[in-house]
Image (cartoon, rainbow, N blue to C red):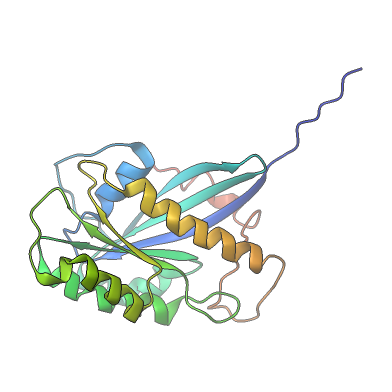
Length: 217
């Protein structure tokens, strides 16, 4: 009798928050990444929205990403601690045609750094997206050399020019972030922390109740 040599893949559930000022294209980025879809029709996110992306990472591993789209309006800032809870990575987005949205990235990055921590007390990995690169850049801060130094000074792991409209670097940016999260999850595998603000990067089975509800498409 033939034996079934197939083995069950190990699953990881990672929560990633996507933050930045309003009108920067956060929702469009998530739609492009999850659904390969873009729409010119803008509808502001109210509070928070989320989507699920399933990745067959390798022969033994499945990674499920909960992507939380956090509203950029000022009146939701006080709620970020609730929205950020259990995040293991973050994406900060600004619009290359709007200097004020770049200036606000420091506020968003500080907010993430002050509210979410890994089991060893370090901050979660964060990437910076210079979005709408299909349009003309405004401001010296969009210079690659400036951004290289900016992310070093502010603790980002990488930055990418992106366009949800033309699908530039969306997959690449998220792949880079997930690689960093997955590497850290391996490092902290099996380690527990009593600090409620510090997250467990291996939420393999403890969030079964969110699997269906996170599929909002």
